[in-house]
Length: 267
Image 1 (tube, one colour):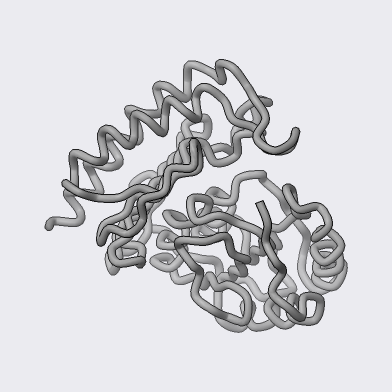
Image 2 (cartoon, rainbow, N blue to C red; image 1 turned 30 degrees about the vertical axis):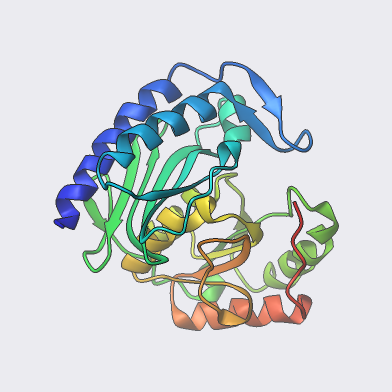
C-alpha cells in the first residue's frame, strides 16, 4: 500500500466533503443537552466520508462521532469527526474542521484535518513528517514560561471543571497565557505548527484527536493521557500535549498535582 498516494486520495475526499460544510448548518439539534449540538451538515458529511473512504480500503471499519457509528475491530479503521467544533460552526466562528484518521491495528497511520473557513489543511503519514497546506511544520522551541497553554473547562461533565480550573490557576502564573479555540483537533494541530505550546483536555473522544495526534507526533510534539499513558484510540480519554519533553513533564506535574485519580467518564 502506497501511503502517500492513499493520503492524497483522503485529502481529495475531505475537500469534496467540505462543499457540504460550506452549505451551512441546516437543522440544529441537541445531543444530551444544550452544549452538545449536531447539525444536518455533521450527518451529511459523515455519510459522505464513510461512503467514499470505504471504497479506498475494502473491509475497513469506522469509529465516528455521529449516530454512534462504531466498528473498530478491523485492522484498518477510519476515525471520523465530520465537524470538530460544531458549536463554533453554528456561530460562524472559523475554528471548526473535518477530521479523518486512519488506524492500523489501533495505531494512527494517516491523519488529515481540514478547516475550510480558515483554508488550513493539516496532514501526516506515519514516519513522513507533518504538513500544513503543503509546508512542513514542527512544534515551537518555546520554554514553559514563553508558552501559550491551550485548554479550557470541561464542556460535557461540568462537575470536572473545578479540577480544570485548578490546573489553569496553577499553570497560568508559570506560562505566558491561556488560549481556547473550541476545536480539539485544531488545537492539537496548532500545537504541531507552533501557534501554541501546551495542551490539556480532561475529556476527549477518539474522533476529536486521532488524526491530529499523528500530526503532532510527526511535528515533534508529545501527546499522552493520564499517568503518561499513550492515548486510547477506542475510548474517551484525558489528553496532555506539549512542544517538547521538558515542557510536557512540567505540565504533567501540574496536572498530577490536581488530578490524583483518573476521572470516571460518563456519557
